[in-house]
Length: 119
Image 1 (cartoon, rainbow, N blue to C red):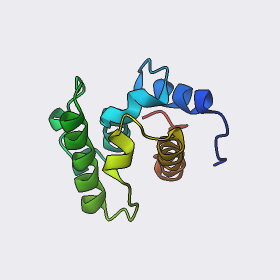
Image 2: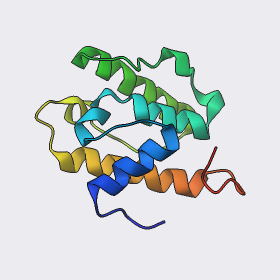
Image 3: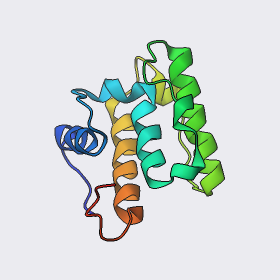
Image 4: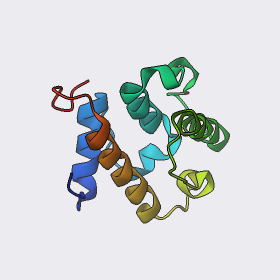
């Protein structure tokens, strides 16, 4: 479980896990990819159909991130994050990068044994 140093490496990891084609950190602002990742690990913790994968407005992004917060509460995950900083157009890449790195580490720690990370 090593910390990822390059943004592109992290984006490629998410793309591989979720079969996406994201190219920039800003595309994660919607929160949909992170909701999808946690749903893969904990399918009974949320209803994936509630996630807006076509979100294109800040209020829709916020709804997705609130779904993730609810998922964390259900799972007793003690990771706090600022929705405002993650959805802001002016967000620093550092906030998003730090959060996505944590998600990667969480995934590696909690993936089912024997799957090699493929769920």
